[in-house]
Length: 376
Image (cartoon, rainbow, N blue to C red; front, side, top):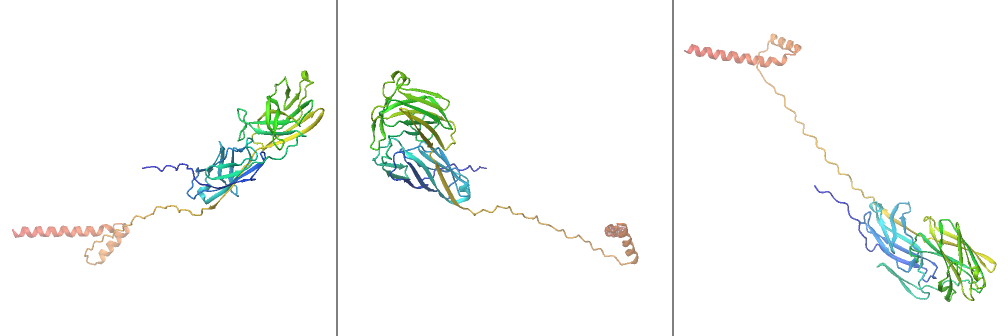
C-alpha cells in the first residue's frame, strides 16, 4: 500500500501582471509608490509562491506585509529580502478560484542617483519603468536642515529597514563664528554617542543641496560632543581655538550621529534639534517615517463540493425453511381425537405421529417373520 505525499510548494511564473511607478520623475528625496497587480491560476496550492524583483535604485523598503481580502481573510504573506518580494499563498486558494490582487509599496530613490539622468527601473522579467530623477526642491540655506536614513552594520546606507538610523543636521551657510547643537532623540530609539561626527561641505548642486562633503573633523580637537541620556550636545570651535570661525563663507557644517532602534513596530521616529548660530537659536524637527506596503486580494468562492463516498449496505439474504410435514393415514376415531387433545394439553402432541408410525412398522415386521416360519 502506498501513501500519497503532499504536493511540494511551487513557484508560479508570470503571476505579476503589471507594475507602475508614480510619480514618473520624482525628486531625489521624494516618496514614490510602486503599484503591482497579480493573479494566480486555479491550480495554485497553499504554500505556492510568486515573486517581484525590485530594482536596486529603490531604498527604504519594508521587510514584509500581509495581503487580505475585504473580509479580512489572509490571502498571501509577502516578505522582502535582498530586493525580492516573495508572496506565499495561504489556504485561501483551496476554497477560492480566480484569485488575484494588488500590492503597493511606498519608497524612495537611492541617494546615489544623479538628478537629470534617466534610469531604467527593472522589476525582474515583469516590467521595466524609466524615470528621470529631478533636482528636488531648492534647499533653503538660511535655515538648518535635518534628515535620517537607514544604515547597515558597516555604517553604509541600507535599502531596507535595519536597527540603525543615521541622523544629519546641517547648519545654515556661513560665515559665522560659533555654532552649537542640542539634539534630543525621540521615543523608540537609543542614542549612540560614540558615533558623533562633523565635517564641512565642499560642493553644491544646482538646487543648493550639498553634493560632496570634506573629511571628518577631529573630535575634541576641531569640535566637542557629549551626551546626557537621550540628549546630544556638540559645538564648534573648541574653547582652545575660539578665534577660528565655525563655518567659513559659503560653506555648511554637518553634524552626524547614529541611533539604535529599540521599537521596530513604530511607524516613524522623531528628533528635535536646537541649532544656535552666533547666539541665535532655532529649532528643526524631523519625523523619519518607515516606508509602507500593503495589498489586497480577492477570489470567487468555490461552491463545488464533492459528495462523500458512502459504501453500499447489502442486507444478507434471509432464507426461510419450508416446514417439514409427515402424512400418516389414521382411521378417525373418537378415542384418537380425545387422546390427541389430551396430549396437546400436556405438550406431548408432537410425539404422537412418530410413535404410531413406529408401531405399525414393528407389526409389519412381525407378520413377515411368521409367514416365513410357516412356509418351512
